[in-house]
Image (cartoon, rainbow, N blue to C red; front, side, top):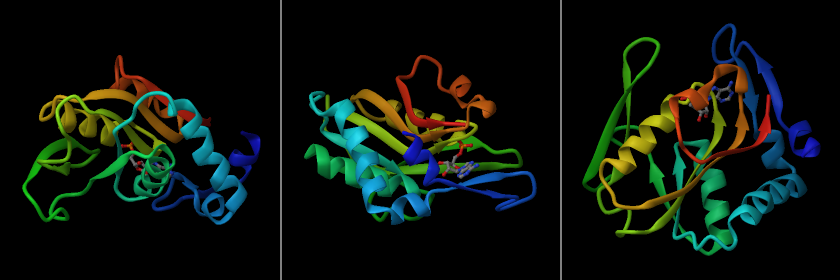
Length: 172
Ligand code: AMP
């Protein structure tokens, strides 16, 4: 795990002052570490009968699609508004200033499918809380786990996700 952590680079003051941005591109560029990362996610779920792995735009797609491939599951996309071409469900959520929203195709899941949701970073938890509401308000699926590569524990994102099955590979 330390090798995975060592492949994640912290960029101070990006995209704005005060943010310590976790840059995963060195990890993605290191074949052995990227392989290990996906294998670690896969090992958690190989016997869980996962049908679908949900990825959140944009870096979540990278991990969700690789994990879906490893598990032999499908993958589906949670995107910013206006990006998905078919009929969508939408969930808005609060930002520091204003609101944002996430969307998913209305035919993303079949009833009772067993799903994972994957993203790169758990920061304040707002995006993941909206994604869970988006899915649970519109579909009858079983959420098996929410998997992050990185959890920024000092931002207390778990407080926005009470009772949810959360796992992070690396914490700061
Ligand atoms: P949040 O809704 O605050 O949990 O953050 C949502 C998304 O913002 C995450 O999926 C990350 O892609 C991105 N993000 C937030 N904070 C950081 C950070 N410090 N470094 C890299 N990405 C971040």
